[in-house]
Amino acid sequence: MQRIRLRYTKRGRLRFTSHRDFQRAFERALRRSEVPMAYSAGFTPHPKVSYANAAPTGTGSEAEFLEIALTEARDPDTLRALLDASMPDGLDVVDAVEARTSGLADRLTASVWEMRLDGVAAEDAEKAVVAFMDAETVEVQRRAKNGVRTFDARAAVVGLQALDPQPDRSGDRPCAILRLVVRHVTPAVRPDDVLSGLRAVADLTPPVPAAVTRLAQGLFDEESGTVTDPLAPDREAALAVTTADPAAAATAPEGAGSA
Image (tube, rainbow, N blue to C red; front, top):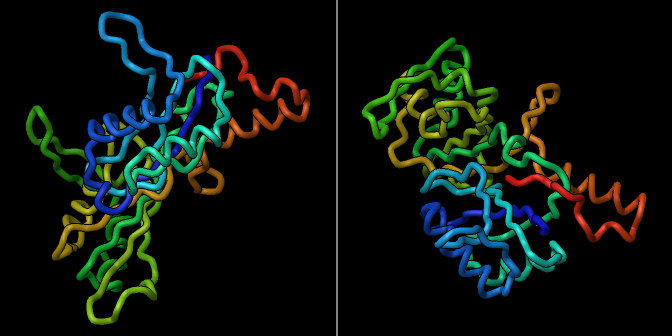
């Protein structure tokens, strides 16, 4: 059994696609592309697809990940192209590697987000960011299934900055852009929680909902302060196998891990 790891996007209007809607669209793409999927056992077999840390509905993303299990070996790049052609525009399959290492989900420890705040001046956003980062704790509330939950949104944030105004924006209406790096903790701290925190510490309240996009997710590098590509270890493992024994490059090692 071969395992393939894929990176896909949620762009434009498709950012409002729920995770369940994406699952249906992806399984249709698997059938249209005639992918030799492995299925679970039991009375209602399902294709073996492992989803990892999907973005909330309403947020865009350039870095969503999943893993599929196949009964026959396929070239990852060819498979990626077939699946991408079968997906709706905006749900784009942009990268594929053969799983040659374990623990994809364990390598998704942080995310980089961009938040566009229409109607907010850059200087107001900068002041709010400084107030948030200077605070030891920033308590926010979120409504959950069991009622309202209060938690600290500050501890998970390892980076928050206001970027320079973008040249593609007209000067008629201000638009602040924030770059957020947040650890994946429990409870999860989402971009809307950080926006709630900015409102709590600096009364920053955008007049319209923020446009939020995940730019990257992966392992947080403490030394550089960056979020690394979670598929890089699989590429490196494949390169090492190819270099050592080109004939073995087409076959993943037995026991390659799942997401």
